[in-house]
Amino acid sequence: MAITPSLAMSFTFVELQPNQRTPLPAWVTAAALALLVFSKWAVGVQAASHALLADALASAAQLGLLLMSRTGRWSVADSPQGLAARQRVWTTVGAGALVTAAFGAAWYCIRVMNVPHPPPTIVSACVAGVAIVLEKGAYRQLFGPPNLGEFRAWYHPSNALPSNLALVGISLSILGGPGYEWADDWAALGICALLVGNAYRLLQPASVAGPTVRRQEWKARLQCCTQTIPGITLAEAHLEPSETGSVLHVWVRVSSPLTVAQEHAIAQQVQTVLAPVQPPSSTLLVRIVPS
Image 1 (cartoon, rainbow, N blue to C red):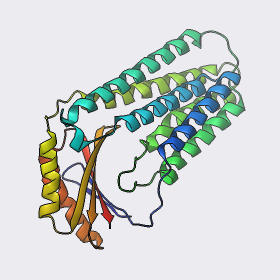
Image 2 (image 1 turned 180 degrees about the vertical axis):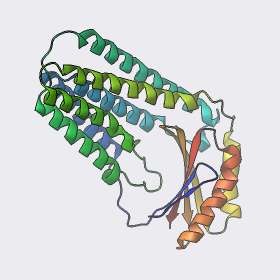
Image 3 (image 1 turned 90 degrees about the vertical axis):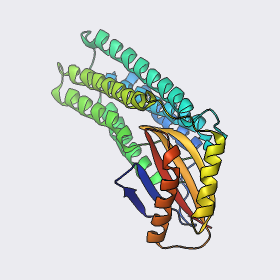
Image 4 (image 1 turned 45 degrees about the horizontal axis):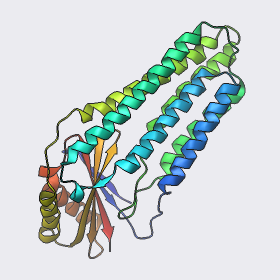
């Protein structure tokens, strides 16, 4: 697989080989996240760790965003109401849910912060450490680029950051002993702040008004790709929500094997043709699929 980013615009080129490993289905990702949420919550309650409970909330939010990404995907050609309308709805709903969950968790942490409670146990630290490994490994190993038309799970390596904060807070609380329970509580508040920051990142692109792009215009642009760019036999596009606004997936099937330089040149031409109708705050992801 070769990935060549364009520095001039938000553009990524991905080459897919026919024998490339297929990523896990979205339901497997959702089931794994649900199991991780339950494990963090159960151990957090048993070990009296507010940081691990907040981390469970962050993972639950990630699960919700994954499901939102799954249901929020639609074909660009079937979107006569414009590309940006549904993007704004989904990102606003996701940001609102994150803010509500973060403020609810922060209110609870502040409320119980001055109430005497036992420090977290070493089991909670182990769970946080395992969560970091699983979340990092899930991004690096489980989710490769999809084949033509497949769903790509919305996952990012920064999702392990709440678990990192939880591990630091729990470790300080355990090493400090009695009187250091505040480290676990402040780690929980830090995770809540991360959730608010993620909500802001989601909401910022949603506030940008996008152009109204009709179905006929998109069909004309995709047909222009197949008619004017040599070697292209099929061009298909889908729009999905992402952490920074949306991702415009364009799958291009080529008629014969090409070199990496030739495929990159085709991807640049596709990007040039679609640039006038690309929604704002979106990333154009061109995928070259050999026939």
